[in-house]
Length: 355
Ligand SMILES: O=C(O)c1ccccc1NCC(=O)[C@H](O)[C@H](O)COP(=O)(O)O
Image (cartoon, rainbow, N blue to C red):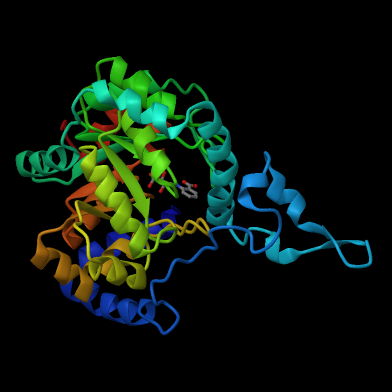
């Protein structure tokens, strides 16, 4: 987040609730425009080309080139991912094909028979909120990202997780995507086996039920489900599977339409996250959370008692306060903590005191 954007937020806080509400009304009206129907905003697969079963590593790159009726090589721009989220999701088919071959679902499920019980991810957050009167902290174990490249070159997932726990984080979020975030499912297991007791979120781009079983196998207590990727039908099915395995779900939205669609869905909501980062353009603004929370859908989640999570771009205590004022019960923080040599000290600074 830029300093300019942060200054604007601090200013909004100083102006008080009335100013924020008026600004929010304008922004909610803008967000709820005719094109924001909340539909899944990415294409799940390239529109043409070989079936997903025939995909090899990076093969969708080559699908941009096709051979036409005359035998000429032509480019098909439709098969180029429109943004990073689409690219990540398309690549999941490649990854999943490889993983399933090495570790078929039946074996993953068999391995779950003796899995230790999960920890309550939601309760850890609400307990912290009650005890500290500040949002519960979900601290993210994140080495790199598509928007920032490598964030922590001396990345040691266990060391970082232990520092987060010592610093008082309620829960941890562990990025498992390998290609774009340099994470891994193995990091969940390493952190669990090292004796970290905070509940763990598997921060993955879930498109297939197989990934939910894998998350549980590697020690996750909760999974992320992204509304920009998954229609309500998939959300409902994936939540059912996660709950049957004892895990909670963090459903993530970014727009008014997505939030409305999720709230209208026919499924239970454990946690609802508002990502301040547009996963297509990388643009980050805390006003994504404050605008939604200060509008009609914010009223609805408050009435329904849904615990809200403000995600991404959180760097200062002003940012935490701003999100808390808008009604979130938790914050999910990656970059600003993970890039520090002493993330536990970073937590103290971010919350203005030890947690
Ligand atoms: O972080 C990215 O660049 C990114 C790009 C595309 C899809 C997802 C991305 N990040 C996932 C997240 O939402 C964040 O890791 C998480 O909310 C923490 O954000 P931050 O505190 O800004 O590191």
